[in-house]
Length: 440
Image (tube, rainbow, N blue to C red):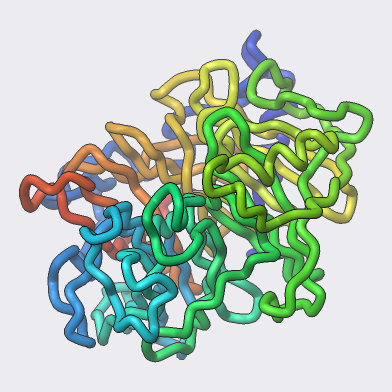
């Protein structure tokens, strides 16, 4: 079935909404899988589900490189009926001179950068049980590779969540860009910053397969924008294109961080970003945002997860809402309209939504970014339930993605940036079990 969040939008408009009007119709544990239990030292899962560890920070990979730290965003690509590839980000924040480079200088964007991507090739059994076939570096010399997204032309877009460079950070080259990694690459690609896609604190992207437009989120606390990149040649981002920022028609510079009503549709338009790659972004990370905002663009709070479905783009404002616990927005390109479909009223319901993915059955999975992180399921009818809890450390879930048949869920635990013991390492997991029992 096609992925759908229609029920979530419907519940936002339900007449059974509470007086706040911000979480209409949502029920905890509805369409879930039951209470969580300790399934192993690292994870609590519902009864009947199992997990395997596919990759751990510092362990040697197939190419001889030690698995990098800070596992974050991740995308999945089918290679055959039973083999998939995962392209995984590494949000390394080590300073120049301290980072461990992933590739040789001739293959590095910045020889001092310790971030990039790794690729995991995995075979899946009939029940969803995984076997790691090989893993290797696929991009190196970047920094703070946070999230990104898959494209309709089988590549992963890896996003740098920083604008540091030569002057303020001591790096060899400027940072703050999106990089493309083909799913079929069998080793490190030659990095090429996609400068027309903007230099800002990138988080995630989603591609509209009908147009080839790329939608981008910006993870900055109180000055975040939602962007659209229109490539000159659809599917060939290196050819350049036009960057634009979302604005609400008739309400220039609207502040959408709080005091918003769910279910209220707004007409939107796009203001051009004439200088997507300003050198002053190095000292002022919101330079691109300021240009768009001064032209009438809308203001959000920490935009992170981004996903295409229902001919729509859904995206998270991690600290948006009156409780500052998260908003889910929906933008419909064909209608040039946007609506707030969900806002969390409490940490028990949803706390700081980050990455988002969807199962082939139409259920939504949200990665929380907080110190008591859960994976939260969201049914097509808008019912929220916990699916997993992090027992290993106090770090976030990230990179969730399903196999094409929905038998296996993959995700990361980021690990602690200040390593003090085995519990602070980054992990990549695979989970399988009785999915048919619930909404995922």
